[in-house]
Image (cartoon, rainbow, N blue to C red):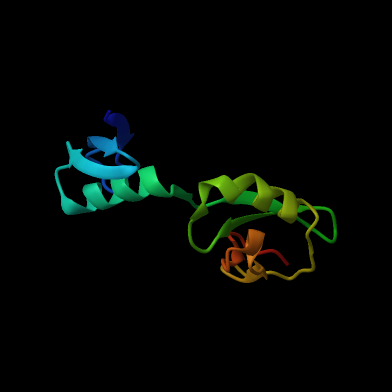
Amino acid sequence: MNEEKSVTCIVCPRGCRIKVSIKGGEIIRISGNLCKRGADYARSEVTQPMRVLTTTVRLEDGHLLPVKTARPIPKELLFEAVRELSGVRVKGPIEIGQVVYSNVAGTGVDVVATRSWN
């Protein structure tokens, strides 16, 4: 029996509604995409969804610093990453793009500042 999953592509502004047919755990058909990037996105979204995490970490002076992962991480590790970052204290000054934490949730991905702080 085939399983159908629907995915809205976010690769470009078109927002294609893509249907993915799965049989026996294998993708057998992808339809509705207007470009190859949409098919690639749908394939990865169904097999291993990835997300960029945006959150905040506490500075030593008590203020919050906005941060994000430098690359997407597996969706199932988002809560683990947030828990891990909740205990992080960062000492300023911080420049935008500066790595404030490495290997979040064991992913090998850095967490970088999205704002400078003096």
